[in-house]
Image 1 (cartoon, rainbow, N blue to C red):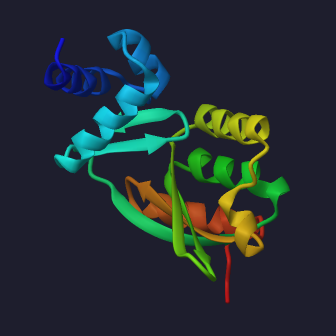
Image 2 (tube, rainbow, N blue to C red):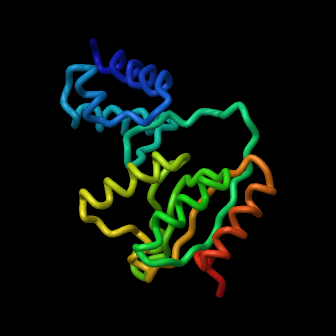
Length: 172
């Protein structure tokens, strides 16, 4: 298989899966090194293929069948309240796309999360614990933004109320 065929196969694998696929898993399926996959994904992105890297692997960004509205929420909490924040959002019908912090030197820093369920929250927290890496929000004393999607404005309002009740919603 040549490099073009391999990149087509990467798109096919990502399109066919319902979960993110790690570079290592793609490398194993395609019998190449992980670094080859990382390079292929970079070339696909340069060719405007919408591939996102999440904490659990690569996903192909495609249009969803259901309408959703995208919102940005500001939150503030300690490391100990991270699970509570994410569970609150997904339990109330939201999906967490990313986390964004405003760093005094680097400016805006964002990380893809793509958290859609309690299972996704658990996997994210396990990865944080295993890597011993601090969440991005710890760079800014717990202040951060999330981009979330909700199917209806009512879901968004329910999330805001639940975060407010838990003293997680940030107000200036």
